[in-house]
Length: 158
View 1 (tube, rainbow, N blue to C red):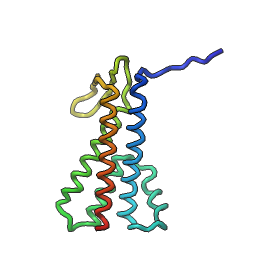
View 2 (cartoon, rainbow, N blue to C red):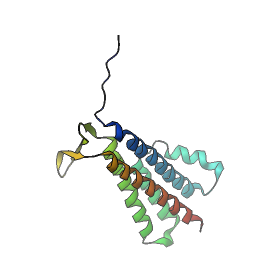
View 3 (tube, helix red, strand yellow):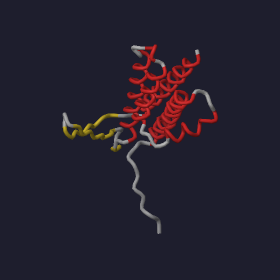
């Protein structure tokens, strides 16, 4: 007897782009982790494990906050921290786009349902069209932010 399976309504052509979003975000998060480790311990491979312990259970949002605080502490001469603010903005945008895709309910005909709840607006439903091409663009954006994060980290050693 075959077991019943509950399947997502995500169109097959959208699965690979969603996979790219997940994979590209993992690379971006790894770059952010590396930035935190560099700010904590410099380029010490002996302390990398300690850095991994520090970042292991942090949410992406908390990693951004920790990275920002450490950067400002380590490089106070870089005030007003315009480059950091821009990087933080892009990291938060990549996180929001990823979360919106990954935590949505996928409906038929390239539709996704996301829900939001906050103090100001209460609970909201959002129905959006989302096809494979749009998802691919989000995957590319996340990849670009990862590259920019890597360049930002290289600036530590200039």
